[in-house]
Image 1 (tube, rainbow, N blue to C red):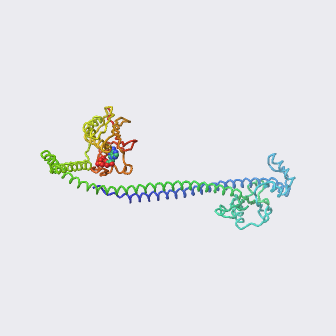
Image 2: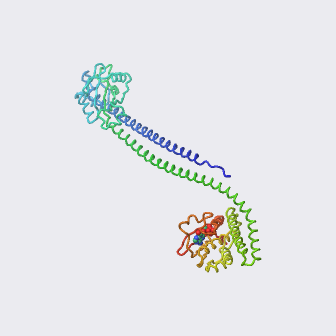
Image 3: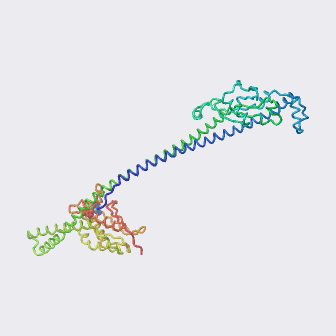
Length: 491
Ligand code: ADP
C-alpha cells in the first residue's frame, strides 16, 4: 500500500513562507533605501554647511584685514600722532601705513565694498569697551544668545559659526516656496586675529568683534531639491521592485496553486487506482481460477462435436457451448494479460519476421474477408524486445484492422527507420476511428463490437510502453492508421 501523501499542507505552508519572505524583503528594500537617502542627504547637508563655514571664515578674515589696514591702523596712528618711521617694519608696510594714515577711509565704505554682491544680511562690529559701533542691519540690538557667544569669543579668541533656522528642516522639505532668510549662518569672529601692532586692551583700539549673518536659504533649497531627487529615485526604484516582486509572488502563487490542485488530483487518482488495483487483484485471481475449468469445457465440447453428426440438435447446442467457452476463455486471457502484464525479456527481434509470421497465421482470415495484405518491410528492422509480446501487439493491431474493414479492403504495413527508431505504420481502408469515441478507444473494456473485450488496444499500449515505445492512433484519408515507434537496435 502506497504511503498517504500530505501535499496540501506542505504546499500551503511554503506558499505562506514565500509570501512572507517576499513582503519582508520588500519592506527591507524600502527601509534600507530610505536610510540610504537620509544618509546621503545628511552628508550633502554637512558638506554644504562646512563649505559655508569655510566661506564665512574667509570672508571674516578678508573684512578684518581690510578694516585693519584701511581703518584701524590709520586711525590709531592719526589719534596717537605716532611717527611712522619709528616702527621697525618693512619698506612695503611702511608705505602702506603712510598712505592709510593720510587717507582715513570711513568704516562704512570699507564694509560696503567688501560685502558688495555677497548674501550678507546683517553685519555688526563691536567695540571692546562700549556698545555696537557699526551695524549694517536696521537693529543694533543683540539677543541673549548672541551676547553670550560674543563674550565667549572675546574670552577664547576663537571664531564661532552657528546655523540659525526659522523653520525645521523636515518642514522646509515640504515647503514649496522656501522664503528668504529661512536658513542663516551666523558668524562671530574675533578681530584681534589681525592685531599685530595694536593691543585692544592696552592701546585702546575700538574694534574687537565682527558679527555677521549670511542667508544660506538658496543652498538649502539646493539640498532640499537634491533630497527630493533621492527620495523620488528611491520611490521609483522601490515601486519597480515592488511591482516585480508582486508579479513574482502572484506567479509563484499561481504555480503553487496549480501544483496543489495537480497533487490533489493525483492523490485522488492514486486512491482510485489503489481501490481498482485491489479489485483487479481479486478479479484476476477469480479469472485465473475459471480459466482452467473453461478450457476443460471447451475441449470437452470440441471432443463431443467430433462424435455427433452436424444435423443433430445436440450438435448446435454443443457448438454454442464451444463458441461461448472459447470467447470467454479469450476474454479471460486478455484480461489476465492486461491485469498482470509480463515484464518483457529482451532479445534482438526483427519486426519484419514477426509481421510475416502474423500474415501467415491470419492468411485464411484475410482470404475469407477478401482483404489484401501489403507489407513494405525492407528487412533488418531489429529492436531489443520481447518476441512474444511484440507479436501479440502486432497481432492485435492487424486483427482490429481486419475487423474494421469488414468484407473487403487493403491493409498496408510500412516499416522504416527514422532518427534511431523503427516505425511501424498499419494503414487500413476501413471507416477509421470514430471521432466521437476516439478519446476513449484506449480505455480498458471500451469496445464498439458486440463480441469485443475492449482490451486489444490497451494490451498493445501496455506492451509498447513496456518497451519504451509509443503508440499513436490517427485517421488518414480512406481509413485508419496505427503507428508504433520503438527504439532501433543499432548493429
Ligand atoms: P476490441 O477490439 O475488443 O473492441 P480494442 O481495444 O482492440 O477492443 O479496440 C477498441 C475499439 O477501437 C474497437 O471497438 C473499435 O471501435 C476501435 N478500433 C480499433 N482498431 C480500429 C481500426 N483499425 N479502425 C477503426 N476502429 C478501430
